[in-house]
Image 1 (tube, rainbow, N blue to C red):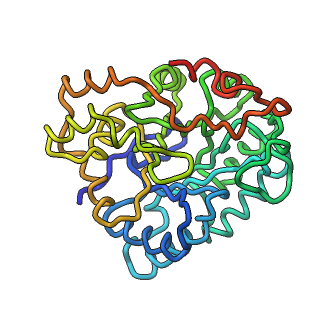
Image 2 (image 1 turned 30 degrees about the vertical axis):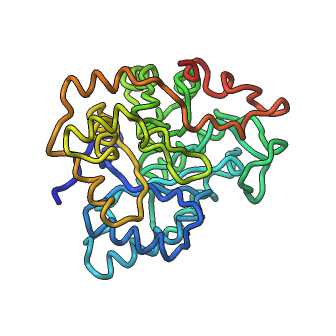
Length: 321
C-alpha cells in the first residue's frame, strides 16, 4: 500500500493526510477501537480523528503507544491526530485545561489539529449525549477562539479549526481571529456536496475535511441514502469499484480530506485503494446532478430557548437545496 497523499494546511507548516480514520464509535468497546486503530496503522493510515465526546481518545492513545512499542511507526510525528472541543467546555478559560485532559487521555504531548466541535456552547459540567435542549447556550466566539489561539502558541496543538461551521459563521470568526482556522470539518458526500461552502473555504484558504462520506450508515445520526444511491451503484459497477470507493474518490478529487470510519479490516484496505484511478468526466457529471440531502441536520441543537431556533439559523443559507 503506497503512502497517502497530503495537503499543506495554510501557514501552519503541517500537512494533513487526505484520507484518515474516524473513531466516532457507536456501541463499540475500547478494546475494539484500540485493535482497529493498530490495524489501520499497519495498513497505512496516518491520520486519526477523535473527540472528547466520542470516548475514543484513550483507546486511540493506547493504540499509538503500542504501535510505537512494536515498531509499526518510528515516531509519533509520523501521525496526524485531530480532536475536538465539546460544547460543555467551549467557555472562556475552559479550553486549555480541556485540551490538556485530551492530551492526557491520548498520552501525547501535542495534537496536530484541535477543532471547535459545533458553533455553540452548553452548560458547563459533565457532558451528556443526547444533548439536553435546556443546556444549549450561545458561544462567546471571541474568547473561546482566543483560547484556542493561545493553545497553538503554547505548542499544544499544531493547528486549530472548527467543525460544522457555515460560510457565514466562518466569516464572522475570521473577522475576530488573529490566527485563522486552518480546517472546517463538515458533512460531505455525493448527496451533500457543500459546493457553496467549498468555494468560500477555497477563497479564504481554509481546508475542508469531510465526515460521514458514506452517510454514517448504522449509526443513530446516519442512514442508507448514500450507499443505496442508484447513480453511485451504477458508477461503481461500471468502474469495478465499491460504492464507498466511488464516494471517497469523488471527495478526494474535490481537494478535500476525508475521515472514514470502518473497523472491518478488508474495508479499511479498500478505502485506501482510491489513488491509482480516476472518475470519468461522465461520472462526475452524473454525481453533480444527484439530488442533495443533508444526512446530519442536527435537530438536537434546535430549541426555542437556545441559540438556534431553526435549522436555517444553525446552517444559514447552506441548509437550502
